[in-house]
Structure formats: C-alpha cells, structure tokens
Length: 631
Image 1: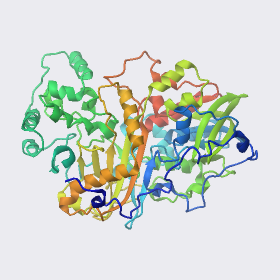
Image 2: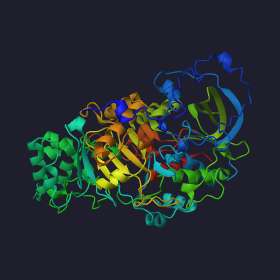
Image 3: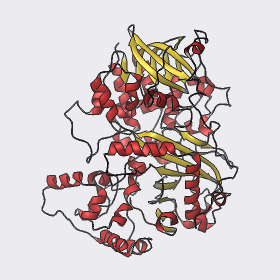
Image 4: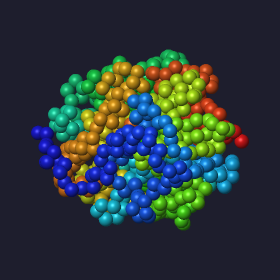
C-alpha cells in the first residue's frame, strides 16, 4: 500500500529548505517604473558577498542548481520578451566581462590574463548564487564529520584531454595519477557491495531488490536465476533469459560498413525487440540506463551509441562479452575529486582571486575554506559577481556594454571585450544584433535536463546489510542511486569501511511524455516537467525509493534522512549530435560551429560551442574564444 506523506517522514525537521523560497518578478524589482530606477545614484558599485562565514552556498540544501532566484530574469527576457531599458551605468570599466561563472567562464578569465596580462581588469557575472556552473559542490555537516558529494559534472575523462587541458590542469597543480590513487568509487558497482536492480511496488506491483544484476555490466554467471525474480510477465522474463544466454553474430557475412550503418540507424530498444527478441516490457527496462550518463533515454539513442555507454549487445555481434565498454565501471576511464569538478572551479577561482582561500592547492582544495566575501572586491583585478543575470550585450564605441540585473537593479558596465560563457539558446536574447544565421544555429542546441539529488543518510548500515553500493531503478524518476564513498583525494577521506553518515546520490533526467517526437522537443518537454516539480515532489520521490529499497534492512525513512539537496539543471548537458536525429554537416557548418563565431568584440565559450558535455570541452572552448578576441 502506498504510504502517506506523514508515514514517509515529509514533516520531519531536517535540512530540507533553502532560505530562498519564492522569487517573483515583483520581488526582483523588475516591475518598478523607470523613474524609480533613476533614483539610484550613478557611480554605484556592488559587492553582493556577505561577511565571511555568513555566505557559503555549498552548504545550502533544498532546491539548488536552477534554484528560485536564478532563472526568473532570464525567463522574463527569453519567454516573455520583457525589455530592460535605461540601465544604470556603473562607474566600473573592465578589459573583459565574462557572462557565466562556470568552468568555461572561469577558464576564459584565466586564459585572458595569460594573453593580455595579469593586470587585466575582469568581471565575471554569474546568475546563480554560487560559481562553477554545473560543477557544483554539495557539502553536508549534519551528523558529524563533513561529507561531500557532487551536484553536477563529476568526472575528469583524462584520456580525452587535449594538450591545452593538460597544460591548464598542470598549472593548477592537478596530478591525475594522484587522483587515481585515492579513487575507489564505481557508480554503484562496488567496491564494497554489488550493483543491483530495484523494482518498485508502485510501478511493478511489488518491491523487489535483485543484488548482483546490472544493465551496464556483466550480470554474472547465472543471470537466469536473477531474472526469474523480476516482477514482469513470464513472457518478458523468458525473453530476457534467452537474450542473455545467446552468443552469436546476427550479422554474420555482412560487410562491416553495412553492419555499422544498421547499428547507427536503429534505436537500442528497437534493436532489442527486433534482433534481441525482447518483449516491449523487457526492452523498456533499459531506457533509463542512459539517463544520467547521456541525458537521453536508450529509446532515443542508436545501438552504436549505447555500445559506447556499456549496454549489452556485443554478444549478438560475435563478441564473447555482453558490453562494448570493456570496463565494469560505467564511468569509463576517469579521475575524480570528492566534490566532482567543483574542485576544478575552486582551483580556477583561487588562481584568479587568491584571497578567497589563501594556502589552498590541488592537494587540499576539497577541504579548503572559501571566503566568498573576497569574490567581488573593488581592489581586485578579477571580480566574480554572483546573483547577476545578464540581459544585454552589445558592441559599442570600440568595446562592449553589458547590462545585468542584480538584487532588483538593472545595471550596466563597459568593457573592452566580452565572452559569453553561457549556453547557446539564451545568446540570441542577450545579443539580438547577431546575424540571423548565427542565432538560428544557437537555437538548435537544446540542452538536456539533468537531476542530481543528494540525500544524507544517518548511516550506511542498511545498504551494507543488503550488500549493495547502488541500484538501477527503471521505474522511478532517477534512473540510478549510489553511495558516495571512496573518493579519497584533495585532503578528503571517506572510506568504504566507514558506516557512518553517507551521501546517497540519485542521478538521472526526466523522461519525456512522448519519446517518439524529435529529440530536441523531448528535451523541451522534459524541461517543462522538471521546472514544474517542487522540492516536495523530489523529497517524496527519494523517500519512497529509500523506504521501499532499504526498509526491509532496517532503514527508518522517518528518522534516517538528515538532509536533502536537489540539484535541478533544466539546461543540463550540452547538445551533442545523435545518430537518429541529426544530419552530418559539411566541415565548419555544424550548428555549434556557426553558433560560436565571434561578433565584433564579443566571443563565445561554453560546452555547447564544442557540442559535447565534458569539462575538458568547456576548457578547450574557453581557450579558443580568448584566442579569437581582437588584440
């Protein structure tokens, strides 16, 4: 029987609310008449940071990511066509204004100082209340010792790094080999406890936890016994047993080019049904296995793409194993900080504003104390201004002018150069003077929604008793859930043997209401669903899953949850081109290549500009954008 909110502990006094609850346009001051704006004296300077120790966003819980207060101005501009006339000109002039304080924006400021000199005056404007973009740090202090998790981008895919990225990380003091020495995290596949699949009662009629089974690694020697426990129809169970038992080459004798063409032109789930013999019900189990990894369901990805994601298919293509990844870790070859790539963002901020964390370096950055009051000081050559949403960027008088909203005030600064390190779809609204072809290309790249919900548990005893480190949840909002332990680097330690408080991360996207429509429309529909969800919706979801999964092992859903942080990213992963949905463009004519063209003294840097959702791509694009600026 479905439990009530009270039975799930929804009324418990935990760290479950951020101090910002609702921010309307009126509260932002956006409805004030121009005469009121004009009462603010010219020459105004801003410093949004609170006194040291008072303003520290990484510890905030509740709704984070695109939280209330971070997106309303941008929505008024892009969705409602609101104008922002008559800004107040501040008595501030810069060599560079960077729009966006994510990794690409921070790297842009870093590269600019290298090219134009360390004395360059730089202002970074960020609409959120924290820097890093999707490289977000979730820091918990409830229950004793500090516990870290990531609220967005987490991996360093070091085999893919360019010389540019390796050089930057070297200058920041990051040593991949040192990170690998302390890396014992495996995305729910161990090292303590097995992966599992969790079938929930609401979707499948009963709660069923199947330890040892994973759709993204080898399920072991006896998958038939585990599949028999699946709460599916007998026909679906039998189709799965046959699928896992087969070892053949279904395309024997066909040329490699023809096979590749087939695998690039059919969705993974349709392949499972047409060639793998699975029922619709059985094939649908795999859809969310790529949600967090790619931001797209396996029903909208080609077989070739899902081979790269580690899903089983190779045993039907003449190979001995199931997966094409060659690695039981779905993350592939990666290194990691305990707060994900937030540590890269912190190292970049420290390099730009050393006073923010004196004495910090790559070996202690996870434990470094950051003083946010130092981010926006008038005497600093680099200033990072949070809670500042840019609404207009224009070439003017041999330089640029940038207008933004901060604390209900419409302000403007002048600069020699501006780099837009924000996502492409918003750029046409910020720069309406861009060429029509460029604006159309920017609108093509619809980012993929992403959710990372971190729940701090009182202890890991129930997980340990069940012998699991994570689970795949095909019937729930988040497709995966993991214990976050075993990233013992940068001064931080949280070993698998520690049974105390532990963050558990729920990872995934929002399934579109109709997966048959074009994939970019799927993303838009998923985004609308995500933005419509309240914090209570997420809380109810994670409590329901934890109660059903861990309750039989003694987990008390009313008492054992200490904090919940929802990292909501409606504009999450950058849009990369997919086999089933995108054509092949001539060299230099792909949307991202047209979209990133410089425009006067304005350049563009972000992961969209590289058409790939990786931190190293964001860094490479920052380097390119700075190189394109007029000397």
